Amino acid sequence: MNKEDGLKPASALNEYLEISITIWNGCYGIEPIKDSLAYNVLSSFPRPASIKTAYSQGDLFIEAGADYSMALINTLTEPLETVARWACARGAVESAALSVWLFDSKANRRQRVKRSLALRHAGFQEQIKFLNAINKHSDSQKSLERIGEIVRKRTELGFVKIIYYDTCRLLGVATIEFP
Image (tube, rainbow, N blue to C red):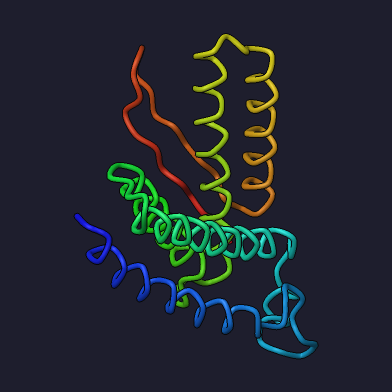
């Protein structure tokens, strides 16, 4: 790949980012306008902070996707980076997918909160694996406590997770939702 091969996609991606940033910056922020649909959704949910957390996570993934995309642009210009571009592309796609999943217009507020809690739970599980791998067991205990907090929030909101084990292996996981 030569310099000219990377300039066209880099230019197109840069133009897309500039347009997206202009649109995103035109938004009103995290606090909804009084009596709007968003305001009514937040105020009628038993734990409004959980919905705000889901939206904050989605926003963070949009920001991360933009950062990965900007880094991808840099890998397409001189000096050419042959491997780093794939890591940047993957990060941009994964961030976009998680943002779309959290902001899905077909998801109701309970589903959005469940997705948010599931994402946080999975993140702490990955953190525990890493900390245990580097022998930071006391730090992994803190992450385990955070998972306990997430499970308590799920229970408070009427989501109950049941895990099925036989003597030594996981057989399945079910989530039961109570009205």
